[in-house]
Length: 210
Image 1 (cartoon, one colour):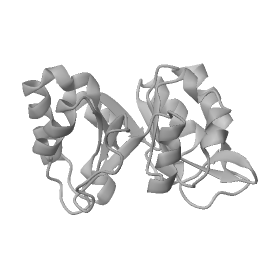
Image 2 (cartoon, one colour; image 1 turned 45 degrees about the vertical axis):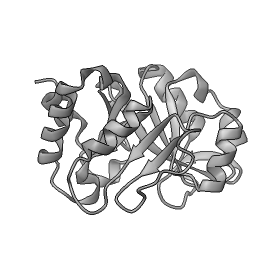
Image 3 (tube, one colour; image 1 turned 90 degrees about the vertical axis):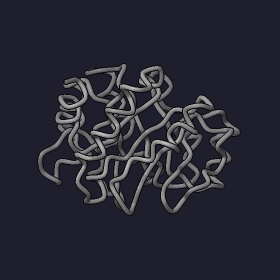
Image 4 (spheres, helix red, strand yellow; image 1 turned 180 degrees about the vertical axis):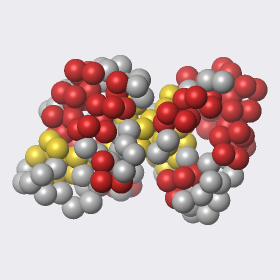
């Protein structure tokens, strides 16, 4: 299973999506989930509205290239119409997928053969563009229950899955992790197709490698 460090490896909220958080995540061998939008015609890293202090996306890719070029990257798309800008970067040199764009925008990603994940959650039970997607971003806004039946459904049709760990929504993660570990032990043929996006990548690494 791949572990995605949510906005890097950090201990304080203000460290999220910083160079230091990305470097630390990569040094520990984790993948990274991060947020990309545009600012004055350039791609930048920013969850909220960007400003002149936002890290350039090209700088982010340079960090990945320097520290761990094999790290999987989950690119949370925060603005429509960025496809051509992504195509013009070095992103294709790395493992990556795009997610969370609007449905009309996802159609364009599909037409450009860009690697994107569709969404499934308790409020989005029918993923859009599932057949065109490379995988599914599985979220849950109302509980910390792992939906193994839906995981099996997507994995059985050869889709990758990226799971949102419950602490990202303020829930306890221990029960979820236990269920996920049991699922992986019983379905080890799917291990390489599953990712976990978490605020606690080091704890997850220790737990799932026990």
